[in-house]
Image (cartoon, helix red, strand yellow):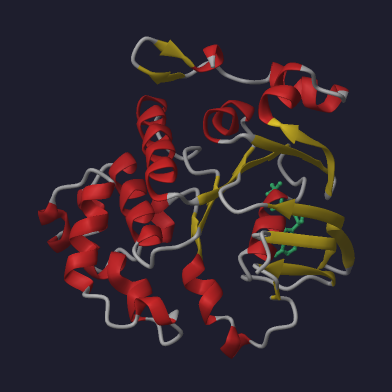
Length: 269
Ligand code: ADP
């Protein structure tokens, strides 16, 4: 078996916008080992979301390939992508738009378990039991299951979105700007929750952020994107402490200071 989680080769995605061609991603190569915690940073429009959507199989590249655990997912027809749907789960920026307001939280969280395309390991899993487990994992009370998303605060809604992502026991969690839409006061709590979950459940993690501080908190590897390319990558601390490009240095300089835990400031770790 391959010891590789993801491999991308010459991944390119072009869009056509009102007759104009936009190269969102240009010949990106990437390799990720199981258990990796990768941060992808870069200014708005640099291609971060496009890259992770391709890795999650939510979009197809214009050219290039993505392998997940040795399987070429770019070549798989839709009906054979079921294993990806539950193995790779995404958490999006804004839980207000990613949670269906008309569904009860319990149904939202167990929805991935009702997919027609479940991995064999999930067939027969008791939904009620899994719901209780994941609500506890994100520190929400069991009675949250019977309520609706609007009854919760922004931070709690993001916990619900994380619980839904965890429900199908994924191997990889991809979080696209997971705290940018939240109040500064709850960002650190959600970051700490993600840190604990990844460590406790042995998940691999890919975090997209325009904020280097967020990925420094969560990730041990860093890829810096600009204009559809990865222009710098390496261990987080190395990129953080010795940026090779002016661009990365400028991203670093733009970091706001947030608190990441009791008695700890964001820039101290
Ligand atoms: P980031 O996540 O770094 O902000 P994106 O991957 O969202 O960057 O976008 C990269 C580029 O691709 C941008 O120029 C954006 O406008 C363009 N783009 C992204 N998605 C689409 C789309 N669905 N249709 C047209 N252009 C898009």
